[in-house]
Length: 508
Image (tube, rainbow, N blue to C red):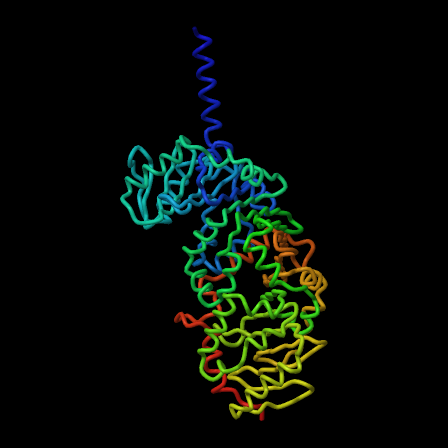
């Protein structure tokens, strides 16, 4: 039966060739995964000009950004890509679970030996056979190579390598039901219009975030974020389209119309407006806005927590902040920019539409006067000196603002930037950020047009620039120590508010 042997060999060859295909990697993702991310590796590399034939190359501009921030985990990952032996024709996946591994990455390999050597050098360990699996266990991560599949899993708690290896073998063997059998998840992951597709359960999002030190600290100081992360959202999906001209992002928040999340936001969110940008300098690195109905906003338990924290601050805590916030009617906006003169310091602008802006200004002025800190009144602004910054409080076109800048403002306003103006005019909740790489500015915006649907974009100041490549360069510029706090862990904003009244002085 010679023909049967030939057929068997041919079938075996086909199985080997297909052994690490995207379809098979998908089937390794367990049905109880709380979140999944699919990455169209060939599309991403091609759009970002990172392919030379089948080999990964790093453009000079990207390599320079990596070299300038070689402590960033993201930069380390990009720097290792050319030596990882990845199959540049297949998708890669990441998923999250609450079992043995909190996070798992699956990728197809064209050269397993290159991957083995690169990982061993990077992690300072050695691959060995454990429970029949070629793997390396370093700190909380298990690295395994099974045929032409790379497995990287971060354990939920410390354990023996044998136990982690057995769990990894179970995933790689595809013996359990796959999440791809869930049509809703499959439809998200198989969106061919996007290069990166994300599906995360509501409870999975909370689990993922709760493992983040940054999120835990942020939620302690800014409990308002829990409106989105601690609510009864069913799931969140995101589809990211990578293009040379622009990167687009579509997000959907899946929740019932009568959910706590929907009821809360429907009663709290107000009408967005671009007018608030008339008080925000166009040099701010980040601008965050949330359009609210002040009377309902101050009733939120998260805001009550913030007001309680504020009330404990010396001196300034005696201001009736609830009364001030109750006057907010529309966008409450914050602009932030790194202080170019002092490391770790920030320039800041707060602006909002208020039903009684003049009354709020008088309230703040009366408080300052009661503390013996009478301001200077100049061209309708109340002016104080604080440390190296000048504080200006005033009203423009019905917009109440407070500026804390260490320079005399000469630049224009964000309102003059048409794309930014258009974005803020339709964003119930939104964020705008800008980065500067050489002579190219990168702009990112993301906002909710309604409580269930959000859109984001990344684009550049130069039409001929590659937007996807510039996005990678911008991500490389984010340093591990970047935060709004100080290096010793003290919160910068709290520190400012605590000591502000002691140092607040009228301008001479």
